[in-house]
Image (cartoon, rainbow, N blue to C red):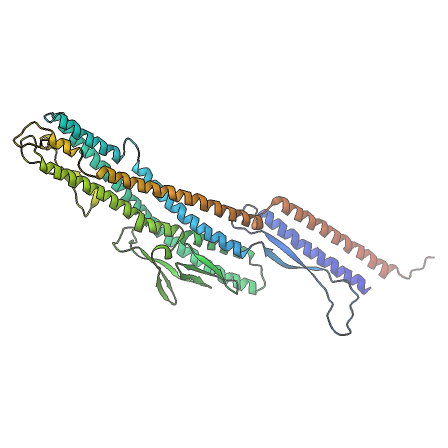
Length: 467
């Protein structure tokens, strides 16, 4: 009779275990399209009442099954690699996107670009050398000069607007990083308390994994799993999250709260209860999207802008010097053709004269109809070649970043696929698990019914004598 009651306990444990299995399969199916959800699997543990001891005997065959744990199908090493490679992919994608937008604004090669305006400018000087007395040829020189100056000013304005956009972008990223860090620290605490109370914290762990990945993509955050299961996140070698405490991620200098440049180098700081840490600059500093924006603002765009300023300075200097070496229509020494402020750069380039007669086409004084100086002006200066080198350098950067981004996307994609195989939901597989649990539940229920009938016979019918 004791065996019969033991079998009831076994059947009951099977009912309870398979109910958990059905619940887990159902939850997996319900979250098949939920971002960040990690597949669960119930792990059964056989129950035995046998106690190892001297002279002990156990005549039973086990006490059934229990749900040992509901396991999240994750691999910590794979998760760490996914975060690392996604952080680098975010850096490359952001850099490539920004520079490609600048390249598109440059519009080279093309009929409306700066280089085309430079070639046209040289051609009209050559035309003037052939017709030094023509008013129309002189007017064309001034018109072409204005077109070229406007093209350089427009391109300088495009770069300045991109810098302003990226400063606003950096402010938004700092806010997002700070918010994600505080959310992850709160989840660290919630998970620790929840699991100490014996409650499943799988959903909280899913959210924490998402925030850790977000910090890797936003700032190159490196996540370390501590012995108690809590996450510690560092950015640029400085601790941002430790346990339930999140340091405040702050833009220390370089950008004002309104998004303007303050004239200081761009830097970031983490303020925590243990003090403030200024993050290092360059490759040792933040990574991910913020690292790309920082590099663009501190290196790539300033370098291009400086090159553009140098082109404009060479244009103004060369043409003004050549104007001074020649004579205008009245026989006077040529006046400067361009004005240029080196403190402002290409954005300051302007045509200084409006009277066609002031164009110094002649190399002879006294108002002679000579086009010698115009011929020299058509060849003076290195600005077309310098501009071509500048644009080619930008195109090379964009192409290089695109190749690196494509390779990194392939690597990150393969890791995502590996993680998806482990943590992703297969509806077919979950259906099989659900049907298997259903059949096991039905079998356990049938066992319970059979045992009920056996006990009914044993208790109510044993010893009865028919009349």
